[in-house]
Picture 1 (cartoon, rainbow, N blue to C red):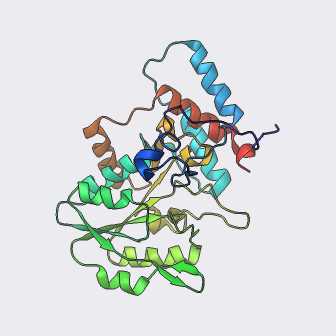
Picture 2: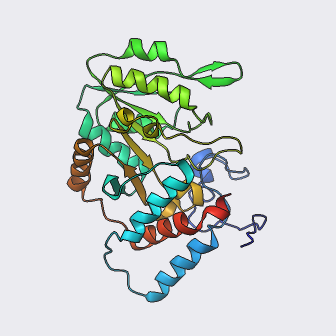
Length: 290
């Protein structure tokens, strides 16, 4: 199928956070908004057609999580990352940031600290602050025209109250696609100090040619058993407004605890349109992406 990425679509007046919020965010409207990961391309035709079919049905009741929904995720992870995941490893949340909140609530308590690596996605700070958990800052180092992790500083900062690290892979905003070697070294430190890894992989599909995201959980079985991987089709296919994301948790104990956090807030359902778009994107959206 041929896709038109040159068509200009006017999004003003559509209640777009990106385009209809300029005065509130910047105090002026004569600028181009480049501050949010929200593309101005139409979603893939396959996604739009699947949503249209669901819309035409005219009934929008509660949904089960179908085998085809799970299989679309399993197939996508295998095709893109050569990661063989299982249905029972998958949990659903309305977004990666809500999932981060659940992880922090369930695996840390007030007064504990969690490592983050600034400059980093601002909601990481808010998630910790809102849950009374301290931010253990492990700033990236700018070296040889690139950002790298400071492993020595990280290891020195870990204490008895350090419970986890929130990894951003690829890193937002610096754009680093962490290498397998970098992630392995980070993973060794986390395993040594019993730090849970919560990996925000939401931008994993969006890499330049010659680069491929390595989910840290794919490096070893030990790391798989110590990692919660968070992802969504929202950035990849420009469907963030449909609010559906995925957590992949191979470790049963971690998964059960995370699922309890979802149940406490009753946010584990998949919406009619969110589930439809996710399944269509992961099943038929690869050509559009590539």
